[in-house]
Image (cartoon, rainbow, N blue to C red; front, side, top):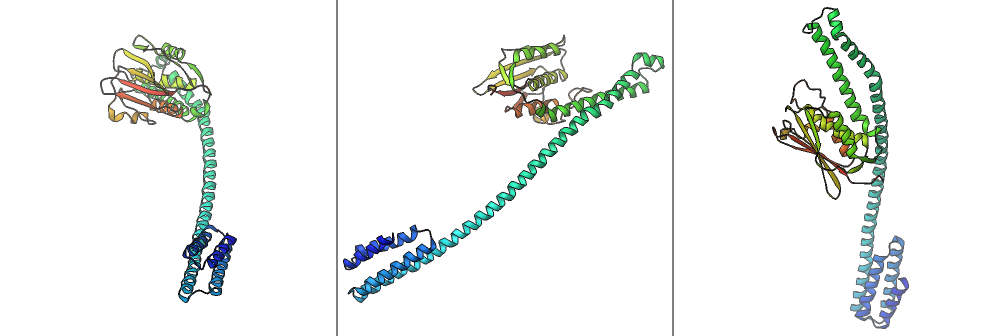
Length: 350
């Protein structure tokens, strides 16, 4: 670039400072200033072009007007190159400072996130240990309370101590037994909700026809009919979790049914990505304003009094399905039954 520019200035002088060569020299000078990215190279380049151009103008017989025009124009380019250089350098320094600040902030944020992640990991471990402690240490005395309450409310012991079944003492003992049973259900529900995702991670092929047959065998009775409307596919899922999903939905339909005979249908459809399962019943239905509420933890609808429900079953269903990449929803109108839907992603074991 240096030699080319000097060559242009020399050719310009030979050609008597023709306007074509003059413009070519100016363009090359200004282009060189813009192309160079080192401050000292730009200063050296500009200074050398200025001196060479001045030398050629003075050493040749050029009229005063042309000489003045050339010197003024080349000096202007020289001045503007320093203005541009100064602005570019300030802009570059500003960018460097911003980059350094961003790098510093990123490091701080990264360290903060790492600390938080470590803290969350420790808290999760503490929560898991606490849940196991609850499982073993709290349930043991609870079982003892329930056993004792069941024993003292037995018919033989009541007759032996001349306690009538409609007496205040019997009612109080019965309440103790029922509360102990309710507390046991609550602990089991919380443990399933908080620990299930960690304990049960194995994904394997589930023969859904066999799994549903087992569930139907356990839950069917003279007052409950459970039917499968079409052939169920094999899916890749955690078998224990899928069992809990169907079990919770079916038991929920049985518990809250207001008809003499419960009728429950299990159905499946599919699209390119998912299997869409449904569990429908002939129950009282659910008002639309409660469709989101019932999936929240400890939320339940008092459709039937004195029912054994703690409001964890549907929350657990939602957690299991969403953790495995699906979604769950329902369609229902009050008085017209309820149909729960959930999706299971089509996939292989890998």
